[in-house]
Amino acid sequence: MNKIISQQSINSSSLLDFTFSNLKYSVKSSKGVKEIIKGVDGICPNSQVTAILGSSGAGKTSLLNILTKRIQNSGKQMLEGRVQVNGKEYTADQFSNFANYVMQNDILMETMTVRECLEFAACLKVKGTQQKRDDVVNEVIKLLMLEKCQNTLIGGHFVKGISGGERKRTSIGYELVCDPHAIFLDEPTSGLDSFTAYIVINRLRKFAHEKNRTVVLTIHQPSSDIWQMLDRIMLMVNGRFIYQGPGNTEISNYFNNLGFVCPNLCNPADYYMSIMHQENEQNIRNAPIYFQSYDSMILKKVEYEIENSNKHQVQLNVSYTSIFLQFYYIVKRTVQIQLRSPILFKAKLGQVLSLSVFLGLIYLQLPDGKNDPHNINDVRNKNGFLFFLASGAFMEAMNPCALTIPLERQVFLREENSKLYKIIPYFFGKLFVDLVSDFIIPIIFSSIGIFKIFNSILINSYKINSLLDGWVERKFRSIFILYFGFNYATVQWNCCWIF
Ligand SMILES: Nc1ncnc2c1ncn2[C@@H]1O[C@H](COP(=O)(O)OP(=O)(O)O)[C@@H](O)[C@H]1O
Ligand SMILES: [Mg+2]
Image (cartoon, rainbow, N blue to C red):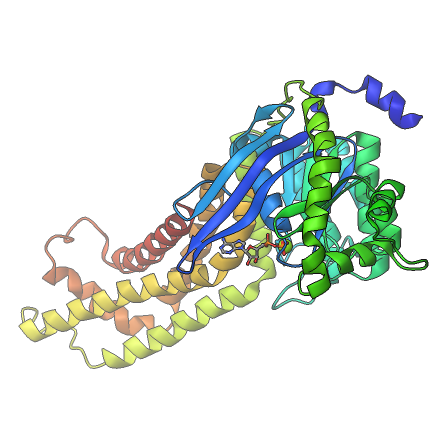
């Protein structure tokens, strides 16, 4: 009853029906062309949970990647057919305006707490007052039962953090905070215990039914409790469907009529998985029956549903906060991450100290040039020293960047895809924090005792380089060389991985 009332009052343009017709996907490899999706039609209706089931390698993730526009036509990937939302084709960019995708692996910042993660997304995505943002975050925490771990770090390789199930729920919460009109999830229950898996699907169902959102997920081993919560089921075998339609009684009636009766006390999901598995000879022999029955008994119905799907123009949900706020929140988060990862700063400091000792010892015997400033050997040695200093500084700045890039790149791609922020504020926000921290290291470097050795060399080196002569204070120049080396490296490395 509730559902009917809310359905009437909701704007039809925010009800999304995803449809696909004659969808084919194949990839070229050295062994030839492999057909992964073999001409399928389907509909994922609004206000329902649609589950794509199939054994491993059936093509579930590929289908989801096509619907979420992660797969495009290219030299090695051939994609044919129509993928539409409310009767209109869409691009990857448009997709992220109305829908979100939770991939199988959870990509989160490991040094943030669950609440901080959700607050970051809320700050960038929820319009209105701070109170409203807090309410949204609290609502999501409550919905996904994250209260107990809300102030625990996500954790990862170096930091102990929340459990796998909590991590998965945080990933889902991260997208739910943005309140998308549709959410796609690849294996949201894999690796979870049965109760946590139940909670995840139950909450997604609530999200679909109460907010009239479209939920599409892949799943390969649902428990019987979960099975009963799936509104629409797509069974996939070798890139083709063998069933598509409502779950529960409708699916069991269909397979009963075909002669595949689920035994009493057996989880229907397990039973259908067992008859789909293509490792089994009997199943391989049965496959033509599945496909022929699907074509003759279900396909027409699906085509009719596609024809009668919601055709209202999609209401785009593009809402960026201002560029300055994006910059501010990125700076705030980057500072927080750096403060919580002192290991990076320690590594930088350790490297600088060891390098300075190493260089100091090599050039310890250099004459100060007072007696013979034009001695060509001294001039060469001093040039060599300056070169080492600048290139060493470059390497110092590069190492921490190279360490953090693999994790942060994934987080950045995910967040940029969810339209949390644009590239430019992210780039300058991160660069700003990196440059400040890279200012500290040369200061420390220049103020330590060892620097006295270098200093005498640098003070005199101006005499051998007329280009620099006069325009930089002597002492300042030594710091400048270090600072420039660090910052040049930081800018360059940030540029490299972002663009
Ligand atoms: N880009 C690709 N290149 C080659 N083979 C691929 C590619 N993507 C998927 N496949 C193959 O297609 C099949 C289906 O993959 P996938 O959609 O990931 O299956 P599922 O998610 O159902 O386990 C698998 O055999 C997989 O190895
Ligand atoms: Mg998969």
